[in-house]
Length: 457
Figure (cartoon, rainbow, N blue to C red):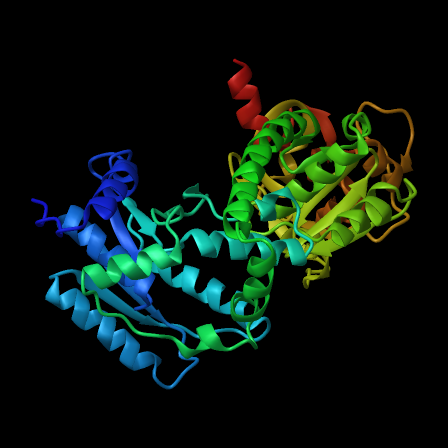
């Protein structure tokens, strides 16, 4: 049941119903809302408006950055105001990491939101018209592209949460007047007046200067953000097409990539590197990927590290690899192992899982239940592969099989009494010709190969 709506004057009532209320009705009926509440006038107004509309669907959260001695008192204030309205309120202290204070505080705040957001909840924030214009101006000064200049969306659907900003078209002056009409209490954060911080500097010094020359600057900047959001949607359509054509399973096909214009290449790389993150890489980092990896000599072991991933070129492909994959060969690895193979056993090895199966041609049954030796390749080994004529370097067989360089450390040689029986590789087990290679024998078969074979039938 909704609370009684406040007695707005005619202007506020019209704006309230045509804007805020209309936006709320666009969400499914079962949607609930977590309101980010700092205690400032804009977030306190938002809290009361949501209370007037759907008190049974809302919770509030105050994130205490612990950057000021009085921040705990602000948390108590927000909690008390919520108690008066019978709204559940979370007060969450956070630790702000070193670095850009504004950016790190924002990151800590969003991590707190994610901690408490429930699956059916949307995060509601009180960003307003001037916030939108300031965001665009600051991002323009930082050299942002279309993504950054699209600033804040009214409904921002991300991979891990959805954000709703219902006050984005409302000016700060309107918000203050509205809050005064409703006699809503709030706190004042002194850092909002501290020009040490970029946003406060822009608001206190740059904004009045530009507004004096361009009185309609705020509306113009907000309109530019709307236009950039249109441009971003168009760009996303193109990016989706290019991604489908050029990237599969985080592998970039350089032949397809070369068919794109330089601008589309840059956008594709930027979007690929961004991945599930919130921010795109700098233009310099994108150019480094092109220069140091994509344009490197084909025989070069080129790699670029950015944000926990390694971008590695192998032949006509660039692979995006996690640290645990790319640096796996630097982990301690046993020089020699003893294994015993039994029928239907599954062997879990660095190169994958293998199951012992009877085959038309394979290793002698006499080797089952025997101690066999596993050793990593050292280099210089030769192998006489079953079905091939004569021995040839194992290195050449690995290259021909196109086993990625960062996976080659997983290759192990199976032997007994210095007789090579075969080789375990990420591409399966390679049977070697030897006195132990007989008709009606057995082989370790890659588990993935077994499932693929079953799928075919």
